[in-house]
Amino acid sequence: MSTLSATPPRPAASHRHLVAVVVLVPVLAALALWAFAWPAARTAPRDLPLAVAGPTAATAQVERQLTRHEGAFEIHRYADEAAAREAVEDRTVYGAVVVTPQGPKLLTASAASPAVAQLLQQAVAQQAATQGTEVRTVDVVPAAASDPRGAALTASVLPLALAGMAAGAAVTLLGLRGIRAASALVGAAALIGVIATALAHSWLGVLAGDWWAEAGVFALTTLAVSAAVAGLAALVGPAGVGIMAAVVMLVGNPFSGAASAPQMLPQPVGVVGQWLPPGVGTTLLRSVSFFDGAAATGPALTLLWWAALGLGAVLLGSALRKAHTTHTAPAPEREPSTVG
Image (tube, rainbow, N blue to C red; front, side, top):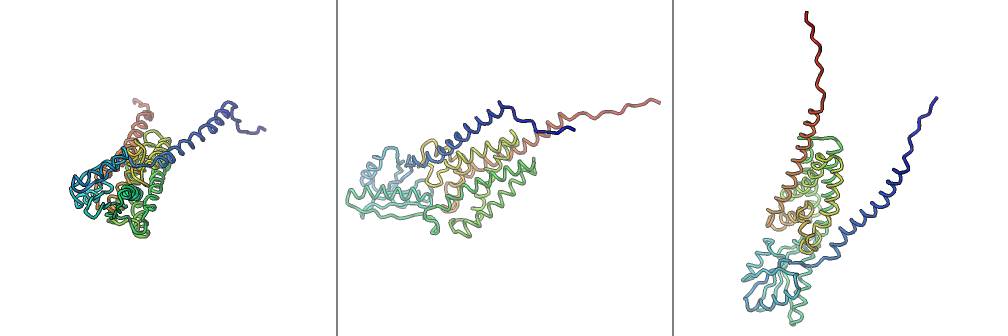
């Protein structure tokens, strides 16, 4: 009788595996720490759009004081308070300093970013204090009363990214391809959009816009992630799931600017974050939920671009696989014919 035993791993292979674990895990940990901690530690205004309104002679001093913070603010000039308020509501600027005979007035939009609204209050109040005046603050577009700091909205970024990655990975691991894979991705994203809106809008009350428009934003953001994951996996194999998941988690999530604003992050981090689904999805959700869709076209097109490319890659990967299978399949043997 003979006994079967597993072949022990070769010493050289075991040594390489040991080195890979010892080296790669700390490298990944350092990369994750850098991606999440560095932008947070360097949060500060960088060309933050801010309006100044009032007569030119009266606003000159305000502009000089604001420009002392070199590179912090991008000044937009408006003739009066009405024009400045409209710019805030259109998401052209994050706030406005209006010079009035009674003293300076600050217009903010905490719905756009509670962190930016607080920063503007502190900066303008400090400048007014040096002149012995007080600043009246008006929140033109306030955040939801149940979420004044925007914590719940910010917390929705990671679950949506995880849901998208899970859907894309599930389609890949279950072996769905072509139209069936695309249909599964679209169906899962639509259902996630409805569930997320039911929780965030109907239950928690942290959103204040059109219910179905918000559901569409949640669904589109999820589809952008899930389609990208499944699409890359369809082209390069299961490793595509890990690659795209790393991009979303280590780049898209910490670079999203959801907790502050893209202009509050080191550059080009803020710009890169608005090219990826987590960041641009958050921007679109704020526009749809609090600003009646103002400045929503660009973010919506970016998400549609991600979703279209991902679904296209899913269909292309399936077509290439079928073509390869057909090309490599052996030709059927012909039966020999007999002549009678």
